[in-house]
Length: 324
Image 1: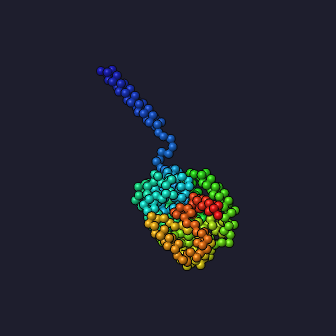
Image 2: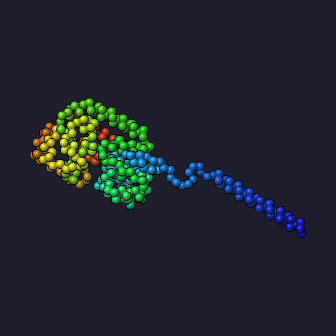
Image 3: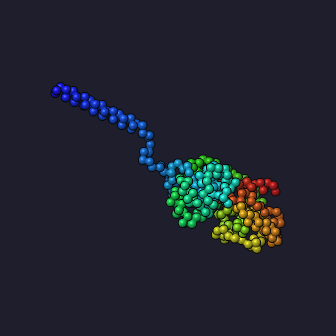
């Protein structure tokens, strides 16, 4: 009897030991199959600096939403960056941005971001506008890291570098800058001389009204800084977008007038421009008499605050100069 019990105990012990070994092997095998790398589940991040502000963003930025900042849309086109959410105009993606909006979804109009839609898109980074009021910025920052892109034309290189760094396209940005520098240098040699001592003004027609801008806004930096043209007093004194009347423009009597008639889908600006052309005061200006009024030389939505719009404007100036 004792012998039988001893045998049974030995069998139980062997079974127990085998089971323990099997469990240990399973644990070891399972552990060996774990993926190397970050096991914490946290997203890796990096810091970038833009206009003296530091932002923490995901290391791999794959989902960018652009709201309010046309400048960022232009840089996206220049660097071939496709945002997941982008600005529409009159409910449509403008033709000038179609190369990067094929897979994008509308997140509202320029000044009317759709917060619910932006939240649904789950962006890694949101590019907003420095024109946004604080309450808009606060809502965006609750969704994702938000960077406000400058609308000041003189910040155009910083804007380009921001888009490049977000998407790891720094080399492409360098090529664009080099190409632009060469183009403006070639233009400077010819156009600045032909415009010497003449009054040159760039203006917009928005909401049926005429507007001028400070030296560092719109396409003004190209004309007055890079080409070295004389800055008219009203441009010097302007602090922001300022309405100008027909009488004020006539007093300036520009020799060359660049007009951007913004196409919004409602035709109010086009009608306003047609009415201006029929105005007898406008017809007496030197620019109109000498046929030196240039309308929408580039797409009417371009801001002048990006390498894309600056390059397009310089190309148009070169073409205009070559046809004289």
